[in-house]
Length: 263
Image (cartoon, rainbow, N blue to C red; front, top):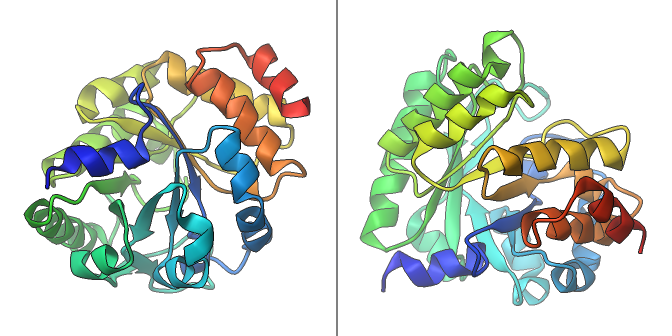
């Protein structure tokens, strides 16, 4: 089996994806809204949701709720879950584990420039190699200097671009990474040479601000988003997906997205 079929579960026919990150319990105790968002999956799928990122346990607990959406299983977990900066990760599941769950892909982080750089690169490479054996798409979440933006370099387009390319060189089929919001973000796309999904980032104070950020990411060449809190902690999760659908799959404006959010 080629990766093409599984990639088509993650990306729509236009090659773009609205992916909902529900894997926060592996990295944080601040996970309000995740279970409530899962209850709203049917409406979100109707509004254009393409895929979800889940933990191993979530894939089992909510199996019946995940049958109509592409599913990537998180293969790594924080080594210190009570530290919101996620100082390091460790590998958990195998590709065979993910296949038994019916996954369409797997995902893991790597931290170029961080103290845990070597171990995170090694884990990502091993996962990519195993994924190739089974024709399973591997999404590499490349986060320079660590999970959070802790210095100027970690949020700079040139640095993010270099980190994205490392993910590609490690064998990723898809790159998930942060964007700075600056015009230089186009370098991230050209450097990655793979479909890039924009990391959701900190929860926006106003949905219009988030939509403006997403529109910027799409304008510079992103193939969509992989977003958690800006959906799960919204008062209107299905509305956020509807707005994202307008911009990502319909090439609409921020204003049209905002209208869809309120529809």
